[in-house]
Length: 111
Image (tube, rainbow, N blue to C red; front, side, top):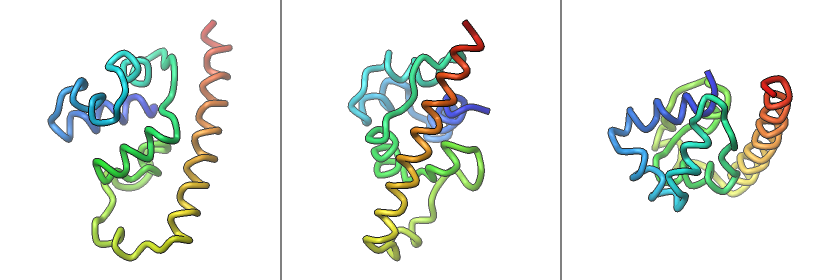
């Protein structure tokens, strides 16, 4: 299952429209469609992934890999310190780069 598939599942779980989701992230509905399209024309930016986490309390590890729970336990957020946040941002940037690289490789195969 791809990030796009998990984004679609998330939107269904939140019981909101794709337009509402895109509006909350300050992106166009077309941009969101590119993310969730089976051909995955583009991927969420690190900034967009951060907004998804902040707005919807989503486990980004789940979103990017499919592992773990969809939502982050709110109690655990209160215990995060600045070092943990920095480490999470670095991991998110690393995962985003990996996702972009894999997307390019998929594009080469599909074309």
